[in-house]
Length: 443
Image (cartoon, rainbow, N blue to C red):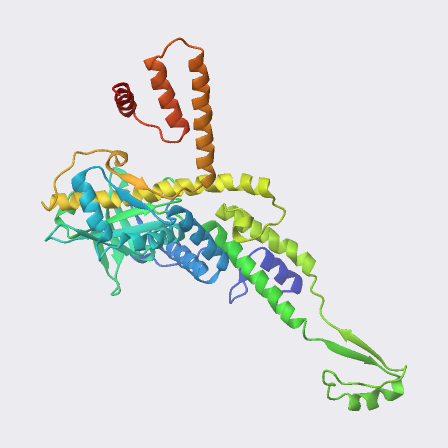
């Protein structure tokens, strides 16, 4: 048997012993068979891709942390609150496309306004979102459904381009695989359903993304264990002992007298030869608070959210809290942009499948920015105030400059309008600016 010193050293270094006494590293991978169930999800495999067992473990750990750990739940919920907010709606200036969007968005089998929060949660929690679009052959409408990440066995890509995903293989309850074609597959228009894949936190060279909780899972587990230990100690502090000191010739007598501990509120009469002391455990709570705070800081570093977002003001004041929010808001704005792209891609794919079935008119290919108009909540409310102040200052500066010039200049009007709109955060194309100047000149 190892000594106490060896057991403590093995625990700190993450080593365990197997049944034969051999020391094993906690980081060592389990030896598994070579069946297809444990191969890489990518086809062919790449060095940056995790194998199926690791993907399954991380997904289950993230889901368990989300369900059981309040900090993990709050991190995912905060991301969704900023990404989706109270209202996120898409429309289009193209009449045919806008009509299809309304029907798709409000269809009883879709109800997209009720799905957005769950979609954002899954994307942040799993790092991937696998979307199924089932096409109704009667009217060309698509119905949206989802497949969880742990059911994806592997992904088939183009031989000469690993970023071009062609098919996805889902594990079924019977142990087999079901093949779903990607929307970009050459034969996708012949299928009743296609699958779309979206990923966040994805390293270059990998097909799958990473959960927002991946780097925090070890520290969330450590914090839970430490906090649970402190709770047990606080429970144990209620258990105490009375140590009664008496002369040697009275030990037997007092043992018989106090065989049953006195009840609370009892009155005991004693002489000066009998002394009572209480023995209770010492918690050293001030020492533990520093360790718990250090672990919480690791969790905060992984989430990117400042401590006061989860209710811990610490030493923050208004100035430091405002400065801490800037990087977080930028990351949330980037996530919101990707989420909007994902919705645009889903809607455009659904419309294209309706066109392929002859139930909608084709629309000339254009960028999503030209096809869709997005109404999304502001990630940072302070940005609007800053942009408005900047637009006001640049406009006043140009008004002062105009006072130094003789007459008006069309070039100066165009430059003023372009800069004012840019500083206001709503830059417009040259065609729109020319149209505005032409309309004002004709009045």
